[in-house]
Each structure stands twice: as structure tokens, then as C-alpha cells.
Length: 108
Length: 118
Image (cartoon, rainbow over all chains, first blue to last red; front, side, top):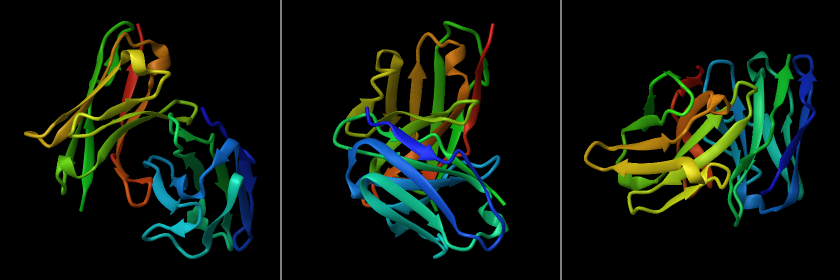
């Protein structure tokens, strides 16, 4: 099983600041199968980034994803108050199970 | 617009069998792979497995011995059965659509809370 470790656990920043969220995999993950979700309180997760760097429909361009191999990053270039949420990475590889990281909470 | 809606028992006792249904609207149940994912009280997400109208199913090895997923094409819904539940199965259960092009879950239900307590 591929374990995804997200850091930091909580990120406290001010509006307009840049947020950098890390997702580290215990084994190499294809960039095509690394995904980021955003979950706001009381809501289901929402697809944010797929294929490690492609924005899903409706994702603002202040969100960007990058990385390869075992290290992936989600960057929010200029934080807005509505970006308060927990962000999860997820991988789908050639071997099951599909796994999620533990999440990073962004506080603004 | 594709929408998913979970339904389930809410409160259960240990050793009982959990049965959940996910109703699909706005799309045919034959159009995708359909998944169950749960979120623990600690907010950890765990993939339970997927099912397909062809009969193809895959389960998380950690739950495989207790899980059964089925598609009902006549009702355009799919189901999850989890045997012999314990308190560790207490979670918010989501159904989700896997988009083969995006390689991601692009549609989620709102979730249904299942609590296992004696």
C-alpha cells in the first residue's frame, strides 16, 4: 500500500499570502494519478486538481499543483477567505488500494 | 447534472450487517465505476472499493473479507454491504463517481453517517 504523508497538518496564514502544501508518497506515484481535493466543513470533498497539475472545472487559477515521483505540492498563490478548508491528496496506482493523505487544514 | 444520494441506517449495533444504497440521477449507472469511500471521525479518508455494471469489483484489501458491492441497473443505484460491523466502522460514508478520463472522483454524494454502538 502506498502511504501518502501530508504536511504541515495545519497552515495558518493571512489573506493574500501564499500557501504551500506538501504530499509525500512512500513509493513513486505516476503524475497522472495524483489528485487533490478540497473539503469545507459539512461538505463532501471536491475535486480540485487532477493529473498532479491540471485544474478541475471551476478551480480558480490561484490553485496550482506540481511534482513528480514521491513529492507533490499544492500551491495557493494568494489566499482568499473562502480557501479555508482541509486539502487531501490521493493516489491511484497500478496496485490497490487507492489511498488518501491525512489532509492539511488551511486556516485564514 | 449528475447527483448521488446515499441512504442508510444511521445507528447500528456491533456484529450487524451494514447496508447502504447510492442512488444515481442525471447519468446511467452503466456510465462509470462507482465507489464507496468513508471518512472517520478523525477525518481520515479510506477508499472501500468500486463496482461496475459489468460485475467488475475491487475492494480495499483491509476490508475485502467483509465487503460486497453490487449494481442494480433497474433502479440505477449501487449498494454496499459490510458484514460484522464494529465501532471502528463508525464513519461518514460517501459514494463517488470515478471519472476514467480525469482519473479522479469528480462527483460525490453528500455522505451518510453510520454509528456503531452497543
